Length: 97
Image (cartoon, rainbow, N blue to C red; front, side):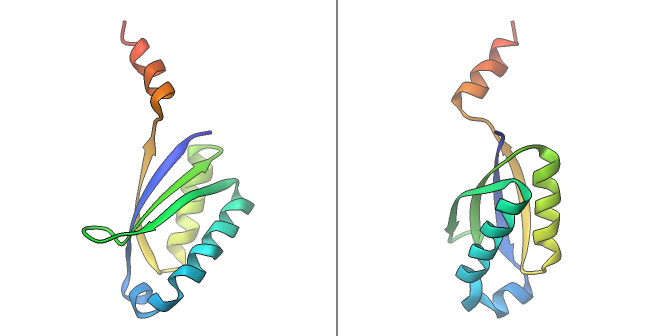
């Protein structure tokens, strides 16, 4: 199952309601299960991003639809990255010849 890393920042709306961030994370996790996306971990961070979240999804399409649905709620803006584990990367570089 493909893995994705989402880097997120609170919007103005999200930071105004930051006291609800843990509850919102739980709601995102539940919504993900319905969409075929599993939240593997979430971390609230210091620095350039407010959140780093690791997801597994059935496909790029499932992750994209899920990410758009979360974005529509208006609490965060995300950058999503497709991530490859060691075995996947080994298969990729094996194709280099």
